[in-house]
Image 1 (cartoon, helix red, strand yellow):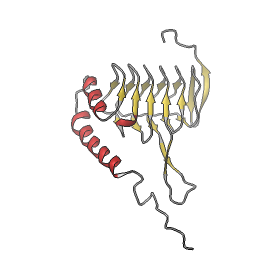
Image 2 (cartoon, helix red, strand yellow):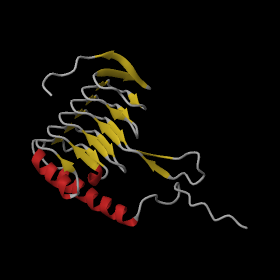
Image 3 (cartoon, rainbow, N blue to C red):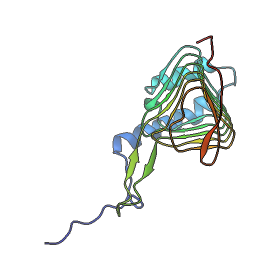
Image 4 (cartoon, rainbow, N blue to C red):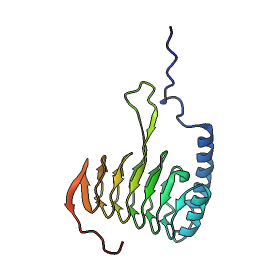
Length: 186
C-alpha cells in the first residue's frame, strides 16, 4: 500500500488560515499604531495588545520596539516590563509574572520544529517567567522553560532548562552561578 505524501513544514505553513489572518491584522496594527507610538504611551500599547487578546495586569510597561508575535498568547502580571528590541515569539502561551523584566534584545521562544520527523512539524511548549525575575539583555529563553521567582538570567545567556527561584544563571547553556536572597517586598 502506498504511503501518504509527507506534508513538509519547510515548504508549507504550520499555522491555520485563521491564525495567519489574525497575525497579519496584528502586524498591521503593530506597524502603524503600536511601534510608532510615543515611548511613554504604555497604556495605549496595552490597550492594543488587549484588543488582540493579551491578558495584561495593571501598569505593564511594554515598549514600542518590543515585538509580540501573537498577543492572544501573552499574559503579563502587574508592573511587568518588555523592553525595546525584546521579542516574544509565542505560538504557545508565554506568561510573564508581576514585576518581571524582559530586557533589550531578549528572545522568548515557545516553539520549535521536530527535527526527528521528516515533515519537520512545528512543536510548541509554554514559557513562564516568574514574578520579579529579570531576563537580561540578549538572553534567549527556549520553549518549555520556567524561570523561577526572583531569578536573574545574565546577559547573553541561553536558557534550555527550568531555573529555580532566587538564583542567578548565566552562560550557554545557562547554569546556576549563585543564589540570591528572596525578596521581602513580594
